[in-house]
Image (tube, rainbow, N blue to C red):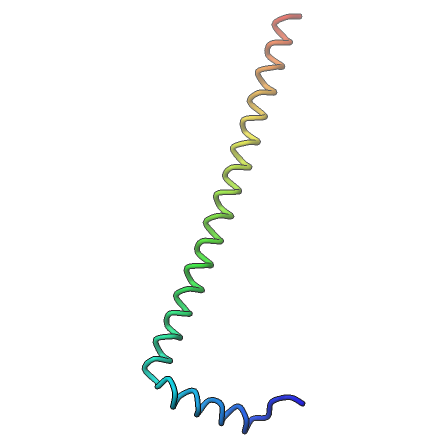
Length: 75
């Protein structure tokens, strides 16, 4: 039920005849660039998310320190 090697070769030959090698090479290059840009965007968004989480934790700890200082001075 699967695709045999000869069927894949026939399909590859038909694709090369229809599109040509130059256009297929351009499609491959464009696809590679798109994947690279996608990975870069995902990585940068993860870094931004981590920075936001870290800055939020810092703000919370600073707030807690100020509250403890206030309670110490009031006692």
